[in-house]
Length: 542
Ligand code: ATP
Ligand code: MG
Image (cartoon, rainbow, N blue to C red; front, side, top):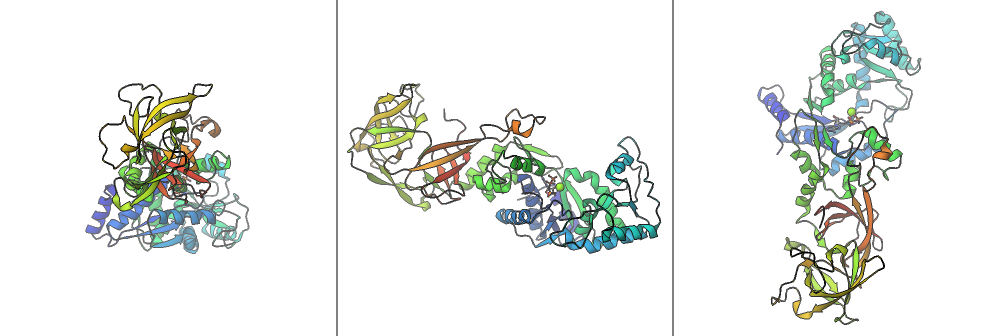
C-alpha cells in the first residue's frame, strides 16, 4: 500500500472538507516513449487517487505541435494500460486552447499581459540573473488596445515564429527568474494533430498547465522536483484567472537509475545514432524496452513502490528491480533446461538408438503447473562451466573426471575421459550412466557430487540467448560523446540449446534452471528461438 507525504496532504484535504474527491492527472508530452521514471509519476498518481476512490486523468500535453506525434500517444496509452491502469478520461491540453486564449485576452485587458517584440536571445539578456535584476522590455508599456490588436494579429498568423510573444507582466526584479515576465504564448507555424491549422499561437507550459488542471478539477497536481521554482507562477496564473477550481501543485523527487539516463533527449539520441535498435531495445529503460526484456508490470510496480516517494531525487541501482521480477515469476512460470555454452557428453554405455522420456515437473515449487517430458539419449549437452576435468576443491558440486553427478530428472553419469582441441578446450566428454539411479526411483546407495542440468542432443532445439549488461560503461563519463559511453558488453548474443518442451511463442517467460529468468523475444518462433535474459539468477557461477 502506498504511503507518503502526498497521501497525508490528501487525507487532510478530505478531512477538512477542502475537497470531497481526489482527482489527479498524468500529463505526458507525447514527444517520446515513456521510461521507468515516468512509471513513478504514473504509479504515484493512479495509486494515490485509488486510495481515496478518486480519479486519474491521462492528459496529453500537446501544446507544441513541432515535437508531438501520434505514435507516441499510442505508445503512452499502451504503456499505462500495460502497467494495469485505466484513466478515468483521456484529455488533451489542446482541448482548452479556446479558454486559454480567452483568459489571455482577459489578462491583457487587465493590464497583466503584453505583446513583446524582443527576440528570444534579447529576452534572455533582459531577464537578468540570480544576482542581478532583470530590465523591463521596451515593449512592456504598450497600451491595452495595442496589445489586444497585436495578440489578435499573432493569432491570425500575421507574424513569423519568434517575431512576437505574449508575456505576463509580473515583476522583472523578482528573485524567482520564472516570475520575471514569463512568456505565455509563442507563434508556431505547424499543423496541430488535433486543432489543424486553427492556431498560430500556442500557450507555454507554465501558463497552460495550471489552467488545464483547473478546468479538469484536478485537486493535486503532482510533478517532479524541478517544478518547485515554477510553483509561484503556477499559483499566480490560478490567482489571476479565477478558474472554476483551485488545484495545488505538489512536487516529488525524480527516480533515476544508475548506469542509464532517464531523459527523453538521451533516449532519442541513442535511437537516432543507432546505438540501440529502437525504443524497445531490451537495454533501454523505456517501458517498452523493459517489457521486451521480460519485466512484468507487477515487478515494475513493486520496484517503483519500493523506492518510496519523497522530496528528494533518488538514484537506484538497476539490478534492485531483479528480485521483484523473481518474486513475481517464481511460482508462475515453467522452468526449463537449456545449455548456453555447450559441451557434448557421449554416454558410452547407453544404446545408440535409444531415447527415453521421463516426466519432470514444470515448476518444482508449484505442482499446479503440471509436468512435461524430458528426454535422454547417448548424446547430451551440458554447460561448459559445469565440467572441470580436475576437481578443483571439495566444494565443487559439478562434473569432473572420475566423479558422478545427477543430470536433473534423469540418471547419474560419471565422467570417464575427455577430448581437447589444440587450445586445450574440452570438446567431448565420455561418460557412463548408471541405470539404477533414475530420478524418482528411490536410489540412495551413493550420493552424486552435485546435480546439473542438461539437454538431450537428439531432441533439443537451437536457441539464441540475448544477455544484457548495463547500457553505459561502469566508469561512465558524461563529458564523452554518447557513442563512447556505451558498454560494449551491454549485449552479448550466445547460441545454445533448449530442451524439446521449450515454448517458442513470443513473450512467453520461463526460468532457465540454474541460470535466470528469460522472456521470448517478439521475433521468436519455432525454428528460430530468440530469448532475452531478463535477470540472471547469479552474477557468477564460479
Ligand atoms: P523531459 O525529458 O522533456 O524533461 P519529462 O521526462 O519531464 O521530459 P513529461 O512528458 O513532461 O516528460 O513527463 C510527464 C510526467 O512524468 C511529468 O509530470 C514529470 O514530472 C514526470 N517524470 C518524468 N521523468 C520522471 C522521473 N525520472 N521520475 C519521476 N517522475 C518523472
Ligand atoms: Mg517535462
